[in-house]
Image (cartoon, rainbow, N blue to C red; front, side, top):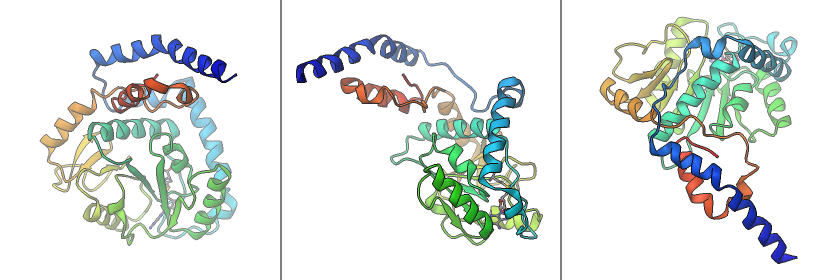
Length: 278
Ligand SMILES: C[S@@+](CC[C@H](N)C(=O)[O-])C[C@H]1O[C@@H](n2cnc3c(N)ncnc32)[C@H](O)[C@@H]1O
């Protein structure tokens, strides 16, 4: 019986060879791919519209408006969601930049003003250490309950005001989609984030009017809406050059073959770090 199990496992591994060979060959002559696709590629067409339709249902289920909207704080934007396909493009670009940075630890992601928490959920395939920050207690409560139902990491929603949060230095990818309505409050929050974030941290600010968008020596733009803290433009350009050579296949969203990798595992893991997957 034991020999039969061993034989089956060995057979499964051998059958992986064509996919392994294909994965390795692609890395011999890697293709350069821009970090962010054109907006039409992630916003238009039937597939994108369908994904965004499903995401808007998840968003509504996570944060039933009647409960949360009644308790809106006066200077806050309501939990208006960035479309999922735009978010996915930003996450994938940030993921490839993190791979190009050759970090020693898995990057930690933070959504500043996370509302019902659905962007935490959407970031998890790229950043398993994802958390959110929200100051509206009703949204924290309702969002935390929704995340618990989805089995998201425990306590992934923190209750704090984004302008006074003191732990931004613990995160590697910080995303903020205009939490505050008031431009002065918004700038306070941006300044607080940039004062604390460590060099190399990625900031994702997908809105018009981010105060460090141009000629700011605290960070440099690496891709549309994505900035690197503590870098000069020429350093961001060098990092972009490396990140564009990272493949676009990882992370793969299925782990069903993981159990049978055996001696292929080091090769598959090294390929994932290059952005390629089985
Ligand atoms: C525009 S929504 C963004 C929702 C989600 N992050 C997304 O990208 O889809 C802004 C969220 O920020 C929250 N917010 C507003 N002011 C805040 C503050 N000072 N501190 C923390 N969160 C805040 C709001 O309650 C709301 O849930």
